[in-house]
Length: 330
Image 1 (spheres, one colour):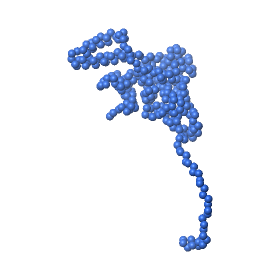
Image 2 (cartoon, one colour):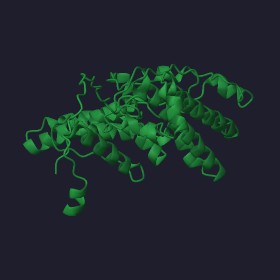
Image 3 (cartoon, helix red, strand yellow):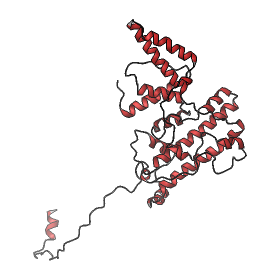
Image 4 (cartoon, helix red, strand yellow):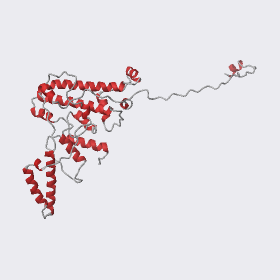
């Protein structure tokens, strides 16, 4: 190899070219990221909408009187459901009067007061416990009852159709809000890179552990959408009970219109539980769950519920609330 290199050797001195060196502009690199949108970030930060079509859990007297003649109407005769988000009945302290207590309960109270004033400490403690239980019974009997809804079976197909239309419209309005005002939406949808928006991906943003930050009225819109789903599920359950000839189940669904003593906007996990299990949480279940979580006795106590009244739902409510606030211990 050296012989070959020697053949191409020259005695002429080679000089390097005198090139002008200019200062070149250094273009900074662009920071990557942010091109793709995610549902838990950009869309949820937008402002929501004011809904005009609302899901129904209860029917007005006028609608019940008209029956299904007005089933194709685009407007509902009920008050706007959006207002219900801020006007759910809150637990109130019941003021008891003598006239509201039956004669039997009054006699029992006199007997228990005599036991509580006994000379024996054991009888005194027993009497005080019984007086406290009797007081809880009087509060339960004096509490305002939830209004029963009278729905004729012939109305159910029309109500189901309207509820389905409401669910679909709520979903479309949410999708429209998320896509509005975003120049990336058109191109990302064409490229299949726009966030997948489905009922599940929307509802899971309401979980207390999701950490989602909502824009103005977005959380209210999502709760309203979830409520429209529970309304549809309730009407379908009533229709199923009617077709199967189960009047007891139909009556139970009519009695429980839901949300009498709790607010879905404050407990979205309970609302998701209703959708997942296909139920409406009853007021007595909420009362027992809250009495277990926030015990007023500050001591060990026993709460009783009859068989078949949905104790496993109460367990879910309690566990969900304790996990959310990290108050559960091994």
